[in-house]
Amino acid sequence: MYKEEVCMQVCIHDEITEKLKDKTLNDTTVEELSNLFKSMADPTRVKILNILLNTEACVCDIAALTNMTQSAISHQLRVLKLARIVKSRKDGKVVYYSLDDDHVKDIFYKGLSHVNE
Image 1: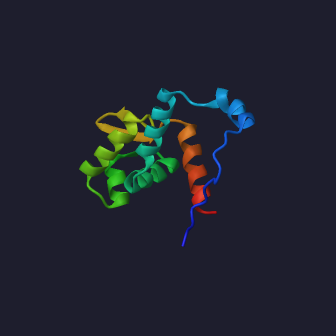
Image 2: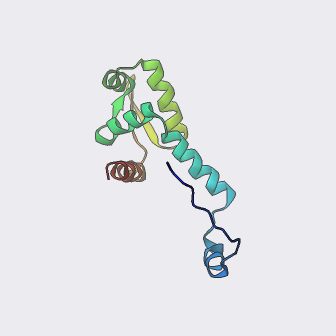
Image 3: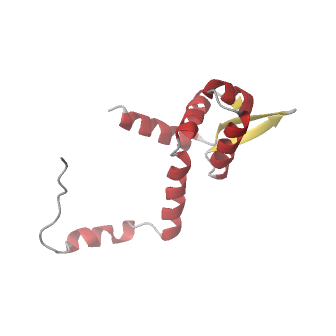
């Protein structure tokens, strides 16, 4: 059973708080970062990101690879696009999705590395 460790004495360590004063995030940044992680925190979205790590793909391809409906995939892609995690490009009547930038790839690989430790 996990036993929570807590301080038995309340004391502020001035050297720590002083060192970190300038490193605290403002509320807007905290909210945006939290939303980024929330947007990625869904099993279907993780599957989509894993596909898009390797290639750009349309909704039909992603739906086939995940064994889900195009409607469900479109909904998840909309969430990812609003969070600037994926981007789209149109080629005729087909819309292709890809990762927005290399930061997304880095975040995904860091998370994957962490869970595989």
